[in-house]
Image (cartoon, rainbow, N blue to C red; front, side, top):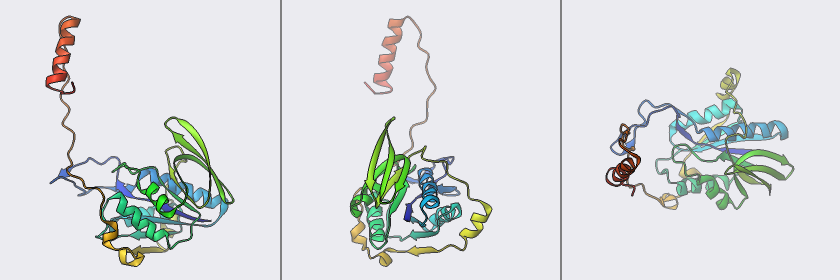
Amino acid sequence: MNIYVILKQTFDTEEKIILRDGEVSDDGVKFIINPYDEYAVEEAIRQKEQHGGSIVAVSVGPARAAEALRTALAMGADEAVLISDDRIGSDEFGVSQVLAAFFGKQSYDLILGGNFSIDNGSGQVAVRLAQLLNIPHTSSITKLDVNGGQAVVWRDAEGDTETVEVTLPALFTAQQGLNDPRYPSLPGIMKAKKKPFQQLGLDDIGVMEADIAPKTKRESLSLPPERKAGQILQGDLSAQAAKLVNLLRTEAKVI
């Protein structure tokens, strides 16, 4: 079975967000595999252990994303592909177009990814990719069973569970609870250094810059206001209620 994992490198969840000139500063920041993508990598390894085949980890991003791919190799992926080009932006439309061009030249049975990335949180790339490839897509899966050319998944549906059966090839995105990702072992880290690692640009996959022109534009970025100290209202209930309404109207401006 040919298994692919699409993953993204994101800030460590413990990092403090600092803005400089309207942009998030990454000076001295620790980067990791997007946590939801880790579930996808682990599930790919488990499916390979059951059914055989190979795992290719794929990322679209800057050169530093190679570190995330090497972590996936150390966990158990067989190959890695980094699609890196200064002409590729962060717009989900463009990223999905780049991935679709890459996958259009591959043979795949199963594509796995994270439910969403913890930085943008849009959850768009996977579903856009599935549409471009014209294959089934199921998001937020918490269980995956593959039997021949069919897959049965459990899908988290806002607290409930849906059971979905699809025909492969298909794309699934992982939700927390699908599995417990393994840590890379020392032998795995050493083996990762010798595994195939390919780096591609737009010219290599046959995509023109005009084909991935952004469909969205961020106008501004700012941190939420600092939290102010709370207030204790005095007086009887009617006086407190009147004071509360006045504060909500004049300071919070929510009514």
